[in-house]
Length: 142
Ligand code: RB5
Image (tube, rainbow, N blue to C red; front, side, top):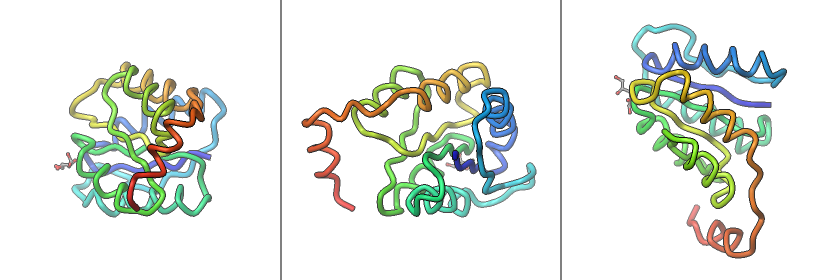
């Protein structure tokens, strides 16, 4: 189960992500926002982070204009490793090395074509489980 969240700046790209998830038969819960009316990204970043941290959802995808504000908000929640990715190399690396459980993107930074490749890479890359990466993740203060 994938948790989705965005602010007004990320709404259109979130609709593209929903299309990708539906096409691939992946279940999701949409924590808002639900239109392009101006709203506050921390509300949606935290809602997705709480859904993932509580185990209600396996991973999250959050989108604002830059991806920065919403990722900062999500990373305040204990247990959340939200990675801001605008390329597929980073999306793969953050799963392999950081076991990132939330993907953040900026809709004003990437187009929908690249964004969906990033989502696909993020969702289809498993954590490496290598000792050095497990150790480093455990050193991140919560
Ligand atoms: C909203 O205008 C914009 O500030 C927001 O989408 C995001 O980029 C914040 O980091």
